[in-house]
Length: 272
Ligand SMILES: C[S@@+](CC[C@H](N)C(=O)[O-])C[C@H]1O[C@@H](n2cnc3c(N)ncnc32)[C@H](O)[C@@H]1O
Image (cartoon, rainbow, N blue to C red; front, side, top):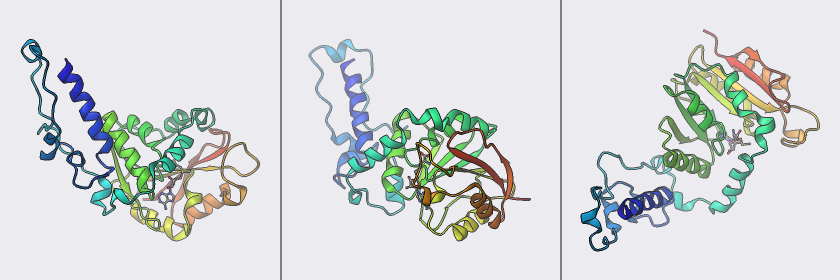
């Protein structure tokens, strides 16, 4: 029993540092790789090994592939990221429990009318607030979480690994390229479009990347004095949103003006 508990702690510890790369050449940075066995397993107490029916398992299990750091694959050295405490605060802000009372994430996901097989791209995924919920809603599909912030990508990746969410992938986005793969059936953006710098060319690229019939869902804060949301000057009105999306060649498919108290919910589609 003790060796099994130790192994669980060991695996959790390895997952926690898998991407952080405090020491680029450390054994822990290559989870599941040959180096992982460099971490020594404590000797069992006298008689324990003989008494336990559980087989002793080496730290390296060939049936589980190594964690492949998505940041490293995209050329980002996680050692150069800013201190995690800053990002932890932002993650806590996005995940604050009272957000659900007005963000209504379950109602938002239900409003998408998913079949469960879609490929969804969550652009500007942040902490993965919607990514994880969307992944649960498409058990036979997948979610690709994109963000320009490597720390956010690292956070989502670790959470997906530790929680065993297998249909959630991550990738680092470029500020001027939505980076949506052609397989995407639905592109989801909650509170992101107002962060995009040069919106018309960015949306034109997005529309070009979407396949015909694919949907774009925009959730943005409504205008006017609200207890939540960005400063008024940063907001995009419903008319601006529609003008931007149709200007990129998408057509308005549906909208649910009363779904959320503080945000618009607009669905656009790429015409056939
Ligand atoms: C207000 S947060 C919203 C996070 C998440 N969608 C949610 O609802 O909790 C905006 C996110 O958009 C990301 N972002 C900003 N510009 C972006 C861009 N050009 N491409 C992808 N993500 C971007 C930011 O890094 C941030 O994580």
